[in-house]
Length: 359
Image (cartoon, rainbow, N blue to C red; front, top):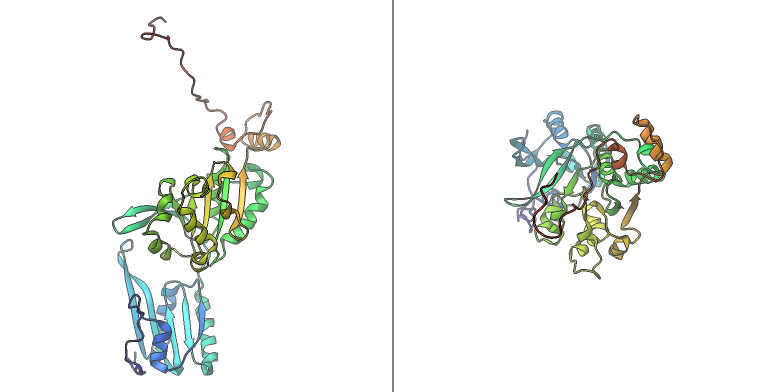
């Protein structure tokens, strides 16, 4: 590599961000070439592979470079954070783990276009989620831990009521979008398949999914949440049993709702692209009305027991003679129909004294 063939023209340290001392790409470009660049950005790339390819392919042209790496304790190695390549004709490549930005002069647009076509060969392959991340308090604040999940074997037209398949297709389309914020609310009786459907849904999208246990829903009112959100852009948050988070501010003092509103359709929502799936069992009338506003609420579905016809069909599919099904059944009832039903029954006890020892 011909190091520093192109010198810095501006040496006043204005290339650094005043907030975190990191290199600012446009300031860096201006420091080298004294003009404001045009920019081409491409997301969802295999950044590390494209970086190695660039170093090999254009080794004779790279005039200087600036590298930033971070140590990953899981892989026990340094991973790419940012790599800047300074090239002839006023071309600067910025490559990180997931994307490339090409900064160039208007007169070199053809070169920039050619580089963009090369970068597109390193597009990430679509994969389904094999794991979900769970939030927990770590030594340095909020942290996440990966848990592998299995995609349940489901036939939406068999295991759920007629209207879910269309709702699912619409959800899937929105959830796959990058830079898209919004809220999805799922509610219904216990055993109607909310959690099973969520597992099926998140294994169908190529996005990071973070599970927030009910006891940690209050983190949205915590000062630590800001850094955590900035580190997890374009993700899907799943919050089960989220009544305390969703309940109306008229019924209960709930400052977490304000953060949720901002995340799903406010300034933070536009910036972070976080989508939230929340389940609840409380009455719909208790939910804060601002959460139900169009544009913020992207989907809401009530999971109900299967209709009588679908209950019969699913029982037969499972090889169980349905006998006489007189009312809708939940998935839990159908999948556990042959198990003993343990119901709490109040014991008959003597009104006074110890239990009788009569047999």
